[in-house]
Length: 248
Image (spheres, rainbow, N blue to C red):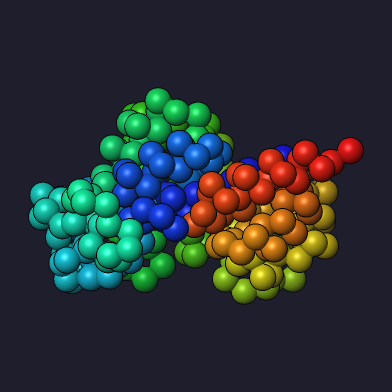
């Protein structure tokens, strides 16, 4: 059964990469979360997509130039008035998310956002938190920085990794195997049915992103891909249920 991963939490309805978005994703029965991590100048792993805080908060400048204490003063619910719900949402620390995650059954795809800013020691810090909160068997590490993923495998061969592929790649399952990844995350338009079929035959997981239109969700769920990553997990869960009911 195709799993539903909430992209930056339930970001189609709540402020992205906030505890509110994560909690609401679980409430609507998503199977997993996708979230992004950066690192403050004093070494705290924080959950935010952009290298700068400008788009999603009332602040400005790079995450790397903030201390953990400073970044907690920002409001991560300011970026979209349609998604505001009357309460300030701080940028979460990854340790907070993992503490909450340990009380759920959710899978968590942690995307290392280190392809533009070189966060020295980020991989080790994420590993330390994974072990501290006992969520190793439910975490997938992904990144656009495939060098980082290779380094992650050197740190721990057992951790599941998945390169993010923003364009089509010939025989992506072979590439994933070449860097010891158990899966890959392609942009959804590059996740053709034959690619899905061949990948699954090779026991390589495929989780396309960011799948928001029902026609695309339907095709990918019917194709049997491992998971879809979407801003609208409630919509995807409902559609999956309807598809499964129609199966003989």
